[in-house]
Image (cartoon, rainbow, N blue to C red; front, top):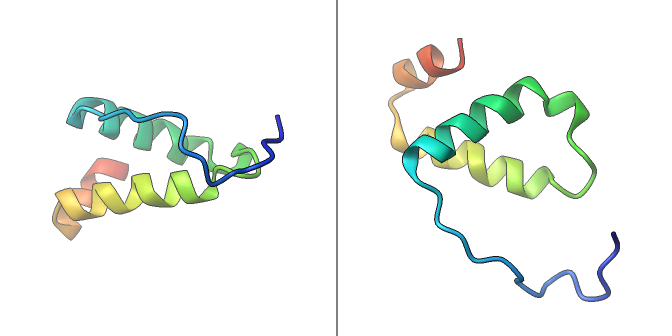
Length: 63
């Protein structure tokens, strides 16, 4: 779906830590299939994970 003004926020949702982690893990497995336009969402999600965990924890999380 194409939106005329893509800068308008239409969803305001606070993810729980569990939701954030589950979604990040799921999207990591599907990143090659990520639809165009979700790149910023995916990057923001990954950045959130990196900001919550140490480097070692991130490695364990994604392995």
